[in-house]
Image (cartoon, rainbow over all chains, first blue to last red; front, side, top):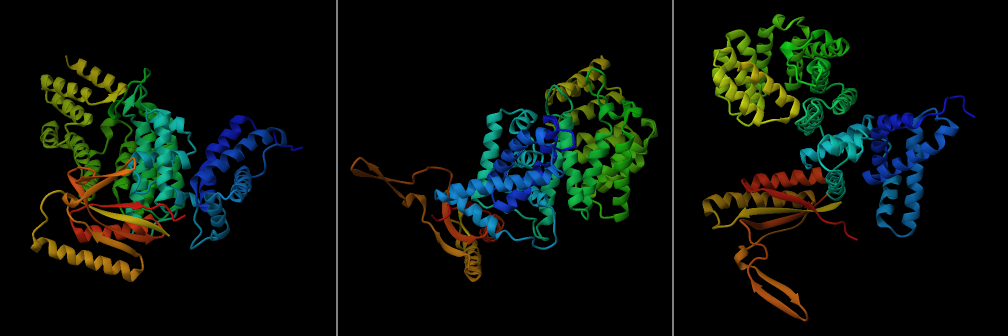
Length: 408
Length: 116
């Protein structure tokens, strides 16, 4: 009998979420096949659900899951191999020949991230695979998060795994020469997951916390696995600082509250402290990149006790730096918002009007705000209408509606 | 090792002038030689125009012969190379070299089934 308390199903679920990615990664390296790895882990968890409540959890639940899954898979593959199933024979050969560790020992999850975010896979597929294999989310959860049917999402994941297997998308950390580009696509996937959670592109709920939490978890994992990559740190800091304002970003009715109107006492000081510490570390390192600069901009906002106390000059300087290394119309739009605070709405509007962002609702919302400040209310109403027509998010629409009505 | 098909798709219409085509062909040949030297080359060839194609299909005991390419489209398969590579990253690297040689045309990289 164990003296540890018997784990509940909820606790086993938690182990599942926490350890699924590691287990998939280790077993994929071992068997050279994601499906075999996943199936074996499902088996191991099914056994955990049967055994742990009575026998108590093992001292190392993750280790137990991996060992059990490996043994289960080998038993199954041997049975299949004896029936001449080539796929099982290949997996057993792979398991026999798997190298102990080549080069510096790095977490298997790092290889898995690079496989999931391989540029030969489409972005929505990269996102789905990353959430499924590293995040341990179920296909249904991912489907719900992205507003597609479970069968559509299941098909997307099955196809992706089929392509990984058939085309032999490698399971390894990219070579030094490919690393910057490949890391960029990994960071983009994590940030996309975060943004999808933070600013849902459609649906009633403004924020889907689970996706944000998952993105931050992946960001932390990547920062732990690649401690020497400043942009990895930059992305983590950016997400933490953005997340720190989550509670203040929605009002009592789930309505959107913009940065200047937020109750700053609701900001999460712990997340801010963590994010700012990372930003300072990045500044010391002095290898700036787009994520680090965006994090620094957010750190400046986090420093201001009131909206009026915001150091807009520093923010504008950071946007100038961002425009220099990663210019885009969206960055130019955000830079114009900072300009409005320093040079006035007229100068900012001239810049905004020169941007080719007609399909982007925020562009019209920024224009509306600048027009409003210039007393051009009729034009502002039109701009709010255009903004509303370009977002599917109910909370954002309601916000824009209220703004427009306030003008009349 | 897996074999990969590197297909070159080109728009229908007349071939480019020799002054444009010749340096491209030289570069394509150079990549082919590089593939051979690296031991990855299996086969390569350029195809005549789709208008030279003939389609045969079984109809009961007979074989039906018709003129023309099987699929009509704005682009057609202009030529292909088969290479052998340990994984997709290596195959894509060769695909990239070929793409640089043919300049504007895309290269589709597609794996063959493993030999039984």
